[in-house]
Structure formats: C-alpha cells, structure tokens
Length: 90
Picture (cartoon, rainbow, N blue to C red):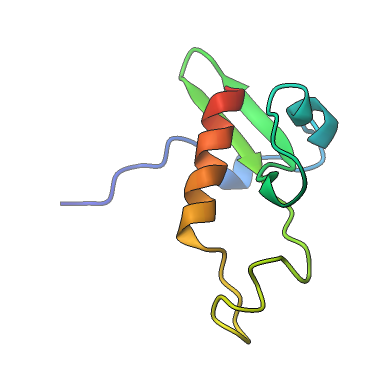
C-alpha cells in the first residue's frame, strides 16, 4: 500500500507569515514557561480542519541534558503535549 498523501505540503508554508505569534497563542493556551509547546501558528483552514504550528526549541531545552545525552531528541510525551496544545488552540 502506498504512503498516504500529506494533508498539507510543508514546503508551501511561509514561516515569515504567521497567524499567531507566541503572545497570540498565550491568549488561548494557559501553559507557561517550560510547558509552552507552541511558538506560533502558521496556518489554519476550518474548511479542511487543518492547523499547523511550530515550537522553537532552545539550544539547551530542559529535557536535553538527560534525554539521549549528546543527541537531544524531543521526548514523545512532549510531542504529544504539543499536538494537544495545537488542538486546543484550534
């Protein structure tokens, strides 16, 4: 079975044109400090039920020292939290 087509072409996104910056996200999402998992919202389409956001990861994230030292990888539970916050924003 072939891989499904993506819902949105990520190459089509313009990271210089955001719909909501961090302050805009904070108006909707109550999380602060280390638990802020969204830096900006890039794209929403209510007709297609799509939303795209991103997280700017700091050079030394709070989880980086202990999660795969030398090769920091964002923990899956934080990726799930990011998706939850994105959904809550939507």
